[in-house]
Image (cartoon, rainbow, N blue to C red; front, side, top):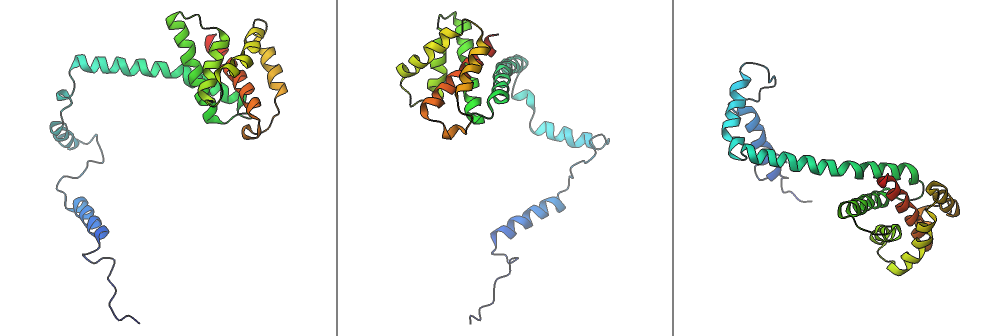
Length: 201
């Protein structure tokens, strides 16, 4: 049996206990305590001293602050349509496809529609569908996706909801990962069509 005395967990050689002791001394021995009631009159001095240590006025001037705020607001405005599309896709297709897949497809669809609207592009609906699906199913050849998307896009000249429901009715209601690659591609095109029509309306 080893007769060596065991080291206490509180011995000075224990690095974690040194850190704990430093933290404890900083909390207990610190001269200025954090004011737990910010409305107390003595709290003002504490907060003023903090502001003097790091004045925000040195970081940004008014013009830079206004510009940064406008950039922030414009970015958040761009996010709302994406979030709305993702929520709608999840509500409609949660039983058929994984959430991360639906989120990615929703984001791509919003970006495609925005690009078409902003640039006045003449990108056909079939091409928009292929663009969306090629990014979420990168293993597919574009020409194969075009062949699958073309009849779907042409049939959309009538009632889009009926055609979408017809496509969904032909797909087995099984887990996404149990679908064949062709069924995944057909379902992806149908979801992309739903997303594009949702964002475009």
